[in-house]
Length: 329
Ligand code: PBG
Image 1 (cartoon, protein in one colour):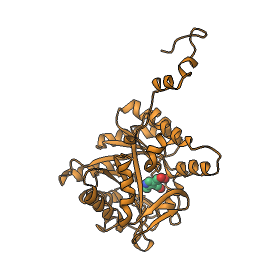
Image 2 (cartoon, rainbow, N blue to C red):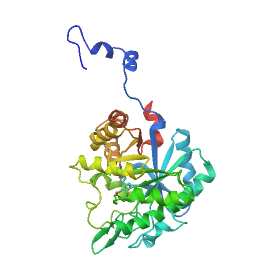
Image 3 (spheres, rainbow, N blue to C red):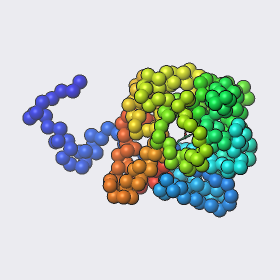
Image 4 (cartoon, protein in one colour):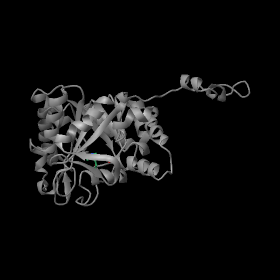
């Protein structure tokens, strides 16, 4: 209940001094709240900049330590791996996703070898980095075919689990995939592999720079509206979450982040489960470019990240995660 009345009550009293403002703070951030996405490329000794994402790079496997060391120094609990697959390895059915020597698999092995369990590894389960058409699933007569796609996603999940991935993150939005992946994992003894489902993933314009980063931008034919959600909808997001939780999701993701704070809040209130927010590439690039152009100052980054905590997110996937301690200070 909100009570009190001016002049007996003056909310500015508590705000007067910095020490007092600290005491009444409701939300704070720590490095424990962050997951760092890492982009991978093949080749050797390369750290390649991404035009649309200032200060974000693609790393070859032998340069990975540079960024993972930074993640560990910052105290981050987890990294998320995303490959930029060479075009010559892409095809209609995304078969490179099942190659145990693909970039993601090599990176998992490398990180686990070097860092053991010092840091968690999360991997997307979806075909878009591997398909020539840039879609997350298989296509037949111009349709993304659900159940056939799930069969491939199961194999991708099992492979990534076998390599040492800790958290599988289906980001494909096929119906029923969480349950099928959980079942397949359990059958072969991977009961302890976690599933972070991108349960509420919207068909969004904010993914643009990411598609540039993983090289699927030019190739994407059409849009993803038959599987990703309509940004006009809330109830549908709650139904997606309800299904994924029943199917065995340990945590759920809302994506994009900042335009969907209301969705984070509703999910948290209704389901009482771990909810993660993805501050996606478009959000990152907007903020970063605006700072570079001096339209806003650097403090906007911290403000944008606290917003997720205020909405109820447990953790945040952000391209700022490698600099988080500086940002928090
Ligand atoms: C692929 C995937 C996407 C992102 C993460 N996984 C793009 C898409 O669905 O087209 C976007 C992340 C970002 O924009 O930062 N399934």
